[in-house]
Length: 438
Image (cartoon, rainbow, N blue to C red; front, top):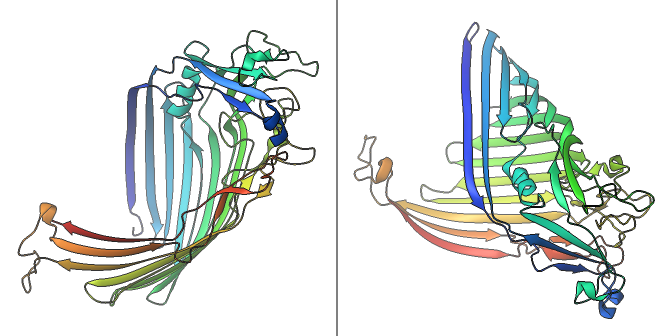
């Protein structure tokens, strides 16, 4: 845009869906044992089972309106002002107006840009679906403390809780966050470019759950007709920060592209999901810690070269620091029926897994089956939408170094597999494919 120019955009989004949904989860029941010795002795700690009819009719509708004006103050300097309004069926009220502003300033080969705004997130049909399914009428969760084995009621010490349900807060609103972005880009000669972008986002209305029927210090639950009541509110804390630096070098003839990216980031919140209960309902803030997506370091590199008109080679390498996981006691120390109790002084998601790395590559040979006339712009024969019929032979390799990337770490103190990975990422895989496009 040149100085004095203005560009306006107006958009309306309407999404609606309706479906009959049935999900069968834990219908046969699950026994939980605290230790291997307890398992060998047939002494389970807890038994849970979901009972009832899982079939529900669920529907959702989302509406959003958006307006934005971009104005070029003068050559090289532009600002943008926007506002968005959203509503979702099932939420207590609409988002309200969410203003946003951005600006960009270019001097020579350097561009500085930044922006800030309010952003709302949909509650999501999955959460409404779960609340409708576990309403105590369609389905409910049964919990048994100190059950018998294999019959949960065979033990004289068994304690059967009333049904557990899910409830959404009557005043549930769309989660809101403040996002701030700033960055700088600079061209390096004719072929290179470097970018550095910093982003910060925080919310104090993230979706999170508490147990509205957790036992008090005397062990008595406030609503004896229920077991656990998973109560979802828009009162959670969430914050993400990232610094992204990237370099790109490209050449049109012969075709060649090299990229390198590094991301330093952090993610902090109260819970890993809207239905995740805190370890201590009397102090939910104690669960504030790294999010499940708190990957501190990420690095990526790609290389692409067209050797001839028909042959190209590409490769990519990636490395990511370990994901967090929680260390738990393996017992229900507070008697709330949720096995996420942690040792004293140990925070949520306080342990880390191993780094994940991979090297992937592919070799592609492509030959068009028809030739373009000399000086022409269209092929002599073409398929749908003007595409040129072509045959492609592709040789792909994933995790070429066959590195083991351990995943699924066990954080239960009483498990003999404590701090041990129970799975791994894909091993080396080679693939050869032949395709015909026309």
